[in-house]
Each structure stands twice: as C-alpha cells, then as structure tokens.
Length: 323
Ligand code: PEP
Ligand code: MG
Image (cartoon, rainbow, N blue to C red; front, side, top):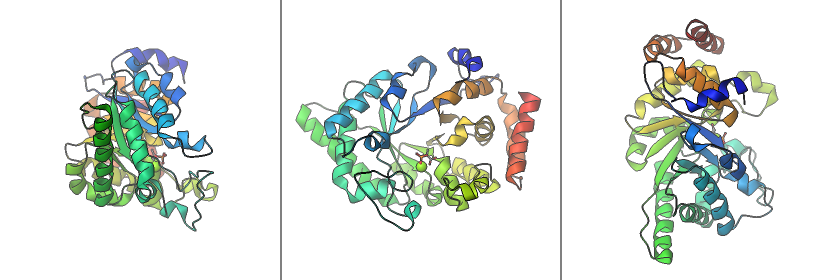
C-alpha cells in the first residue's frame, strides 16, 4: 500500500467530469476480506476460493467452506462479493489431489475439473449459498469457461443446490447472480451466445494473455514475451468490450492494478476493475485525475499500436501529459 494514496480512498471514485468507475479488490484469504473497509471499495471482484483448498490437506467440508465464505460476505456489508468456484489445475496444484498431465495449462483446469466432479462443485456452491442467507451479497464466478454447455451445467448445479437449501431451511432463497471469466480466447467469440445465460463477465487478463500469446505466465525463460500490453491483447480486449453489449463487464487480472493497464482498460471502455488491495489507492488517484473525453484519442492510438513498447509508451505519455 502506498500511504500517499490511501487518504484519497474516502473520496468518490469518479473522473474530473463525473464519470463513475467501480474499483473492487481481489482476495483469497478470509483475513484479506476482513481487513477491507467496505466504505472504500466497490466490493470484492474476485475471491479466489482455491486458496482455502490449498492450505488444507483434504477437501474442505461444506461447513468449513461455509464459515470461510460467510466471514468474507459479512465483512463486506452490503457490497457484492464475487466468489469464484474452485480453479485448480494448471499452476495451482492441490497436494491431496495429484493430476499428472504433459500439458497442464491445456488440461484439466477450473470448471472442466469441477464439472467432472459435480459432487465437489455442488458442495461448494451449496456452501456459498448457505453462507449468503443472511447477507445476500454473493455472486458466483466460473473460471476457464470455453463452452456454453459448461455454463448450462454449472447453472443447473447452482440451482439444484439452491432448491436443496430451500428445502432444508424451509424458506425461499433468491437465485444468485452467476458470471463467467473471459480468460480462454474462445470465450470472446462466444460472448453473444453467452450473454443470455450469464449475469456478468469478468476478464482474467493473466490467463487471457497466456492463451492468446501462447506464452506460459510462469516460465522465466519467456517472461519477457508475456505482456498484457501486447497489441493482440489490446485488440482482444477491445473486441470483448464490443461483444459484451450491455452486459456487466469487469477486469480482474493483474493488468487492472497497474496504472498503465487501468488507464488502457478505461480507454477501451471498462468502468469496473478489480485489483490487489495495495494497488487500490494508486488507481483511485488515477481515476480522480482523469477526464473521460481524453480517453477516446488514447483508444484510437492504442488500437493502431504495433508493439508492446508502443502500447506502454502511449499510456505513459498520456499520464505525463494529463496526470
Ligand atoms: C486471470 O487469469 O487473470 C485471473 C484473474 O485468474 P488467476 O490469476 O487466478 O488465474
Ligand atoms: Mg485465470
């Protein structure tokens, strides 16, 4: 956290000319949720539920999950908390659930794995919805979606869990909002078909960059080739902003927490960003010093850029002139 920017968080998060931008926080530990002041954040845009699974030596029970989710939901008061269903596989192994694959990033990950084990998925979405009974601020986010059927199946299980809970508790529960991560490039082209099935979308720029550029996000050998400032990533994000229509869209990858990244995303039309807590003050400051009309020329220039360096340079120059 940068102390210089923390004080500004008490001010409304809007540009000089009054355009509101919703800044949310990414979290993975209950404590991270409990340390937030709900007055200063737009909610939790990404709660990585796998953290809870990674610190245990067996699958957490429904009750353990419920307690953890409930603490986070309660900590945020009336602000929304977007909990992502278990996203393991790839770079996130579970010690008690070994997966052996030649190509883990193209393998059994995220929603693919949990839909192959619906009992895991059902326990989790039931724990989430049980935790939500008193607070009603839960949203559920599905990771690594690349097919419509994954969304249809997930929604069925979420609905099944809701009906089972209604029966058990003998009370009516309203359905929770369900969103999809845009992080497999295929999902960009499915947005028009996904829209009627989904309440909101959230771009995972880390995986989207990895899969668009075919560059492992964790391989030091190719680290200099991994960049969410790559012109192809910028084009893809612009396409997402178009294909999403009037559905709710946010970005929850690391890009949203970098000043240049956040600026570029706002130029592309994003009005909701979720980031690490430590980036919040800096990005809040950036929003408050912006004028929304200045973003259009930046967008035009960004869409013509040919190199990562050029994209980054455009954002930096813009901040030197306007920031
Ligand atoms: C992403 O892929 O951008 C994302 C937010 O999810 P994770 O980093 O947890 O894969
Ligand atoms: Mg991801």
